Length: 555
Image 1 (cartoon, helix red, strand yellow):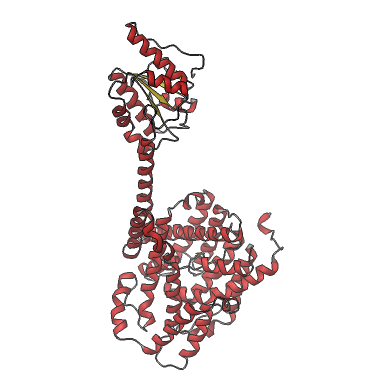
Image 2: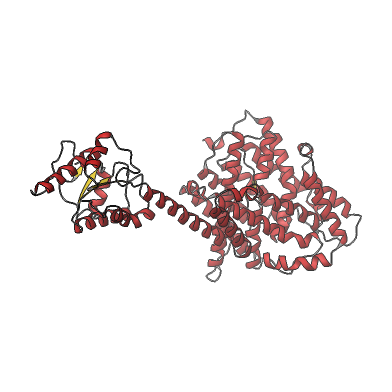
């Protein structure tokens, strides 16, 4: 099976990439675990389980997975809302993993990637703001009284006015190292790890600094998820948020990996791999994860190209957690806070914010709205509201464009010389409408009014060109019914050109062309225009109007 076949052609690069990514992941996993409420060891095991299985079973060769900022923000809220009860908290993680597997099996990956960029930008920037807000008080040596963004923000003034100077010193030192660490040095010693080591060593000489304390070693314990009628809705909602967020986070990182390696990932396979990793993480008391952009970039830049690199990254962390975990007991909270503040800063989409004023104002407003909802309401509301508003705005713009381009006479329709001559000779009594591309329901809602307004004056014959309409839905079929029936009531004759058999089948099935006269459907626009001209000649002669059907008429 392909699952057990490994590409060994880049083995040296994958070993170096996995080793470097593991070193980078170590301080981040500890920091994310501590920030989540489950403890630093849960962060390490989360990086191990998600990192290994997502690489082994996933669809993005060079991707490195583990705890990420967005996932930790949600998980910390879940941990607090479920009072830290392991069976419920990690039950939500297991359920989230199973949902991600289901997403992959049902091939939802292709749809998750369709989230508009302003929504993603606002969402990720909001996550970055939350991470920074949660860590500022800890940087000053204080712990917020309660979980959540608002309690963390309200704790900042008191922490700033009454700082623990020793904690602030090592926190500021860590921040300075991370922000100023030369990129060339990062090949040998990553900035976050340098800050972790330096800050911890300096803290040993300073009194009164809050530290992590004892960290258990060895293998994690199995946790059996529990669900009850009173908690199932809360757990289910948390699982859905984690699953969707993890999917979005992972697939965005997959796109970054594709751009760097000139490859193409398998979205649905990636979701299955992420789901398996998060399922195992939940069963063994580890925090959930997703594709990690920074660790993936580090892996690729140091040579990693295949799933072997992600698996090696996880095995490096296994060696650390089994043998070196006791050394992490003296790591100060302020050092981890400094590392996480840099993580939050990197998540904020400054590249878009700097140029946002040059783009559409609606996109900027949407980004700001999603950011605000993310910070002050919740993440699922932010994403849902952003996607709905973006979709409605897109449909509105598309509808306006379609209505502008349906054509009336020859204003927006490219006509042949013969077609133009027929319309010109009619002196306004023939009005042509060309429908362009799939008709959206937004345009369909106003289409009947547009045709009625444009064919009000001297029009006696209306030609509807369907040659560029590949399909119609119920909304479009109702619009066609309105046009045809309105024309009959107004004493106008409707001619149809280029209607395909699938479109005709839908319109007939919904009884939307019951007002359309017989013998008025033609295969080409020219034939329909000739027939409408003959119809007008019959009206001028005082004889009953007839329609002559050319041999090229539609069936």
